[in-house]
Figure 1 (cartoon, rainbow, N blue to C red):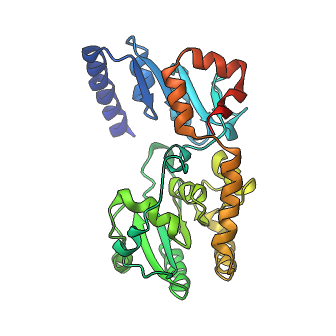
Figure 2: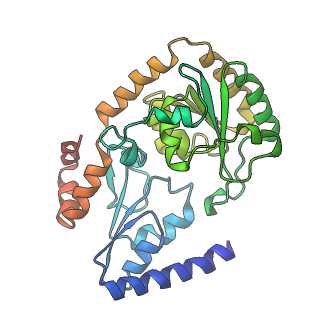
Length: 303
């Protein structure tokens, strides 16, 4: 944490120099640096944050109060300390995976060594090195072995991880470029792991996803994708066997992908094109902030 703090001061200083030199008007993003620099410069800060206050208290206390505008998914409505938060009907992942923004490329299957019609599974393992990941646990080595043993009976396994892949699993390591992973997720039979973001990416792409870590039940946007749309399912590490049982149950469904396409379609019919909304919000700021405060339904112009 001390190392992260030292780096943060350096980031702030470097960005402040750029802002002043280039006369930057707007700072956009998910970084704590954006709101900090906006408070000591003429730059306005627009922060996009989809994590719960309780899950990331450091960012909540040291970033949110300094942001000129904070935009978050509506699943977080009523939970933010920052009372003037702008809520939108969508998820961060829809900013780049909405059908208006993303078209899966079937050529990725050949690149990954997948035969036409072959079932395959993506496994995603997190490193849990973020400041809010202290004390967080995910899948154990034994859990991974058990999952791989079962999944290998049904299709090919591809593993992606934030850290060095365990030696015994290197044979399964994904060999396609990182920017091709979303097409691979779209065509995969299922995604299993202990990552938050990739689990949500699978959900909005209509691919069944199961995750196991100590964040299960604590992330509002994932809870919405699970409870409202039944696109993904989260389990605490002590409930791994429940996840394993559900995985086997889903593997036996012949209509699995077709059913998830229907669930995805329901989600898309109720959510906005997040990129189009964000673009409008930035280009029309600060009037856009006042419009959203007076008429939150205005966002549904961006479907």
